[in-house]
Image (cartoon, rainbow, N blue to C red):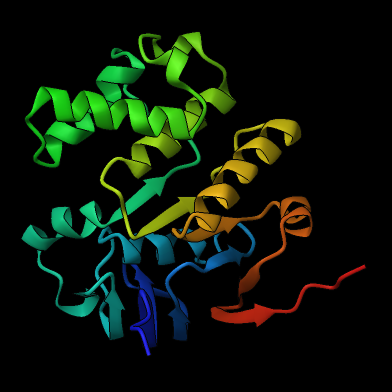
Length: 227
């Protein structure tokens, strides 16, 4: 049996000294697409932050992309993050740099230094998200949906094992949300594991997948009603 890409056993997620989710037991296998839903403040983002090393795992056992989250040291976090891609609700593009410069900034920060290899990688990820023509544009010159496509391209730069998408459609109109979801599902169909926090139930109905809900401090699977 292949190892799961994520395994949480008896995990409690803390935000400062408050336990926001308790007794989480979860396994995610390579190539899965998983939604995490729940109201604002229910613990979705805290769980995501625990996975990418922004919040310490203080209780329980967690293995994620071969890292022990409970024993994660400050110096391990950049290496953990090279194995995952993160897509945020608010894009987090640097406003004073072009699309190309935003992507090359990430590559340099993660140890790339060969210009030809960097150019080739940037072209490859922009092509994957249908944004090759935007390489020299500034973020303010492209729409919100296009900025989120660039954010997805950025998440793909280091060929991650997993993409964590935290409310990736939260700032987008319904039509653009569908386009970004189609892109994420396509990336998933090409073998990438995707864990997506969202409260957009319309999207979940349109693109069904395994769904876990954060509610009253617990995380449980919900079965979607099919029409």
